[in-house]
Image 1: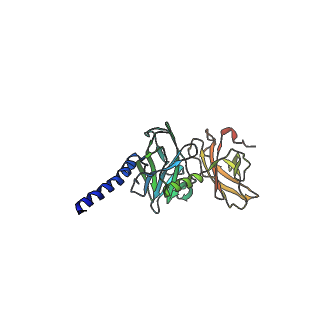
Image 2: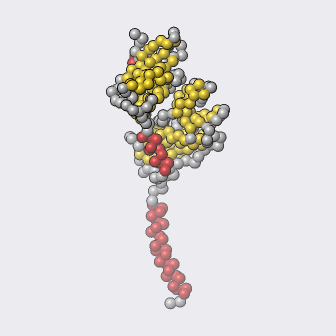
Length: 290
């Protein structure tokens, strides 16, 4: 067989093998990328992450990576700082996108007590599609503050396609699922578990109005931390631990600005022994002074 004829036969064989492969690649559904590009350059970067199916919704997240020495703020920043704003209203095929916040760190300095994140933070987002069989486009407009010695307002816009069949597996997916697993669990006022808000009572301290919050804590779990905000997320002074844990009980004092209770009640986040709960306290759930 002459070389030219042999090459022709080999060429036909390769084409016969590659043609079905080409058709399979064309027919195969394209998986969306699991993350958007990082956006930002002054102290922090932000991106969106797809983590696939969640608890009754699609699970995504906003991730913020902070430079050493920089911080950003919880939903209620504290005595100073910038509350974050995350707007998903321009998304497509999205009925709702609800963001959740991990427990922050408490930071005390000359400006007072603030609630912050350092290093990196993953904020899980539950996404409900209008049509579960169709792809979604998650669009985020973010305004948040990052601080080193001074605070810098930061604006970022990110977009991520969410395919109906899920996300590619990868480290970012595991980070989101780990963050979602650590979110505070909702518990009612007066719950009987080992970690609970037992009661909230009005008190007076040196003629100033305050609240006393009694909590249940796990035995041997160390000193608990309590974060407070009004029911609508507005500012409430940082709780002070006034009774160390004894026999599974501890107490905090929350100073009040003026003498009025928050009209929207309270939202309290209690942390101890690596666990966290969140409790809504309506106005009528706060005991009057005896």
